Amino acid sequence: MSPRYTLKVVSDFASAHTLRDYPGACSRMHGHNWKVEAEVITTQLDNVGMGIDFKKIKHAVKELTDTLDHRYLNEIEPFDSINPTAENIAAWLYQGLSKKLNNEHIQVSALTLWETERACVKYTEG
Image (cartoon, rainbow, N blue to C red; front, side, top):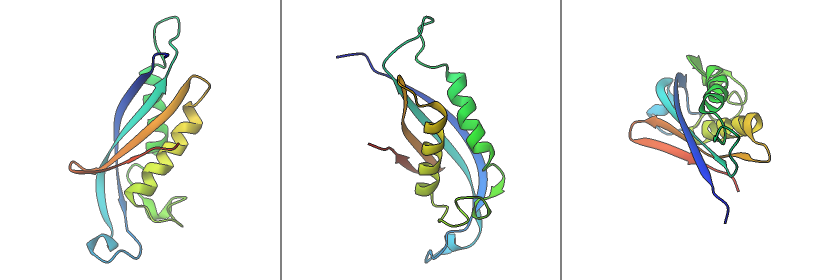
């Protein structure tokens, strides 16, 4: 069995959203200080002994979260047409990060999005 390394970076952003058709207070505009945990798997190390530089993962996460930071999510694609739930945001971040980082040796394995310090969603594929 070959070695498997899971690398994780943590980032954050702040944004507001409104949950459409939600039967409660979250149907009104409100905000969160979101925390993002991105997990990347690699099975091969480079000549320095790294699977992927943490800086590269952090940069890719920041590029994505910068488009959401201090914004009203309901006005940003795809959340102008799909509900900006934690689940949908986590899937969007995971898919965007996968496009930026995945290759033959590196794969995004999970994206955890914390809405509060006590509530999160973990999104994976496959």
